[in-house]
Length: 358
Image (tube, rainbow, N blue to C red):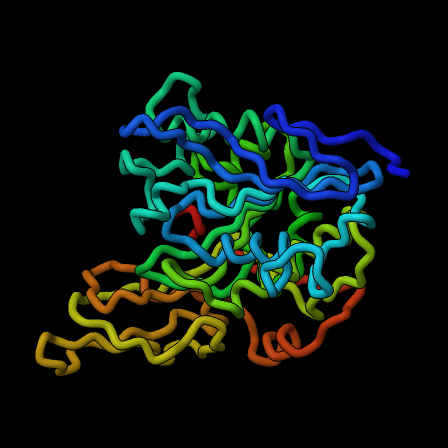
């Protein structure tokens, strides 16, 4: 017999130990068609926290979409089979899953909403505002305010790629607890831009962290699996599932990182990948003229790990090329190879340039 009542959402009832697809209404589209955001709710059989998972706020960022898909239905994309990662009968609490917030942006293969606004700068939104403000309002009031904790899943824009890492407000204790539990080797301090979901939800009293993993317009399974494992780690930390979390032996808490920038425009040839360890003054990229002749080289400003990397070959003076976090080679190898650490070694990294400045 269930220990808790059904979960109610937008007029739908989700019985304990079940999952159900529901809809968040957005009003009519230009053709008079019904516009909605699909929501999937998994409601456990025991009382516990409500965890919200949001992905696809930027319509071109798809890795987070895949993370949520795998958590709902497992690798075979069929619920109720042996590969399911979340047992609905054993779940403590409730998960509200929004695989794609910006449905129309995804269909248009663009970052912004159809009105070309960035939804992630408009929270908490406006009930009677423009189209993007209304999406932000509906999500914030119907989903975010129902949650005790929130994980927002992102990728880098098409012009860049990111090593999977968590972004969190270091000055918020509960946010840092979630960030540590997620299990990435690197956590970057960022309060988030004004109007972002993470910043607004945290201010509202809902501890929120953000995953950055990979790039836009594709499913990258290494990034996807990092997201899946991290969400499950957080669920284990919150007591929603029984799980032995895999944490890195070394964790870097990065308040500021350093970008290597182009000192000349041209065509970019990167010589490194995200996750590579580089030495100070190592040449990490070349810039050529239109005929392919080298005109400049770009050196790493420090010894450390490449966390973010430009993908667009067209560069202008001052463009960010590589985001590098200070770290020794030995420490980075240990962070990658050793897991199951109950109490990871933490190192604080303070550099010259804030993540929010880029």
